[in-house]
Length: 341
Ligand code: TRP
Ligand code: SF4
Image 1 (cartoon, rainbow, N blue to C red):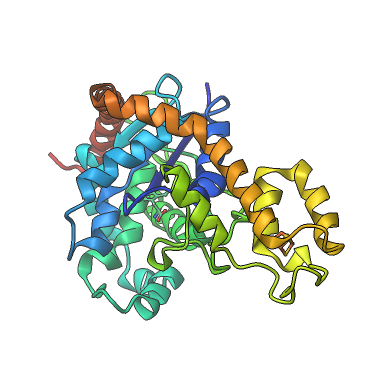
Image 2: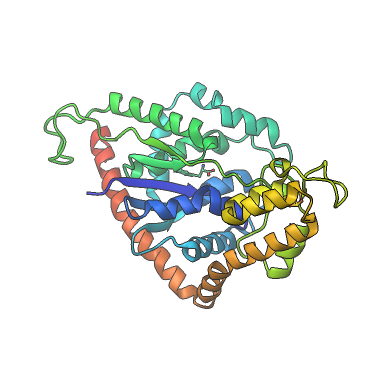
């Protein structure tokens, strides 16, 4: 039997090259080897976007279309929306009962976001419980492996702590009629391991971290002219002012895009740049065409899916059913352990 994976993405806006290179391409590779559950984390998105939730439904569908267009396969993987499987909330409730406040208050990502996100009020009960819901997402499917980026490691660690506490408080006892495959004193839940995704080598167009809030990204559905003008706006080697100045590709963000999207051409660009034999405008023009070509098949598939949203909705409802079947079984086991009706 294949090992199970669960991962999620928050539908907070359009997916961009950073999502593809940082997470999606990794998800796509994992599909052959693992039983993958890929979830749209709309509750988690709402925790930070609650003041302005208007685009949520649109973002959810748009992101799922991008997943599919990039190669997430509904034949291999289970694709679903978190809020459509109500059991997430039930398990989150149970976990919230056993999670000490201090664990949540000390969580480094929580402290960091409270500090850094100043344009929204995140001092809510729900946002403090972000990792509790995330633990429920993972354990509802008893996923042993969770592919995540570096930034999610504190959440994974909390998941592991919560589950250790749960397993300690509620070991499966002999005679508990939850499942014959459990022996006496065994744990109901596995302790999930993070599968660390190599962090994306792609920075935003301005050289800062690629992020929705900086508007410094190229989305997967960006049109051709916008790609051209966005690439022309990219920051380059700050020491290369005139065409005749030799460039330092190692200090150039454009160059790192070549590394990801055209590694063979990168070597040549490297040499041309150092000898001042290519200008930055031409170098960026060429990169734009490379990106356009790279995105073309994804955008074509996107176009087909957009014309046939029914297919996407069917995929989601099938995913939901598969997810719910697993989720219900877990919840009934948990309820047996806790002696809940
Ligand atoms: N917190 C994750 C993020 O911001 C999204 C997420 C929600 C998630 N539930 C999850 C990731 C469960 C992995 C497993 O990207
Ligand atoms: Fe960067 Fe290309 Fe200009 Fe060199 S020529 S500095 S790699 S944009």
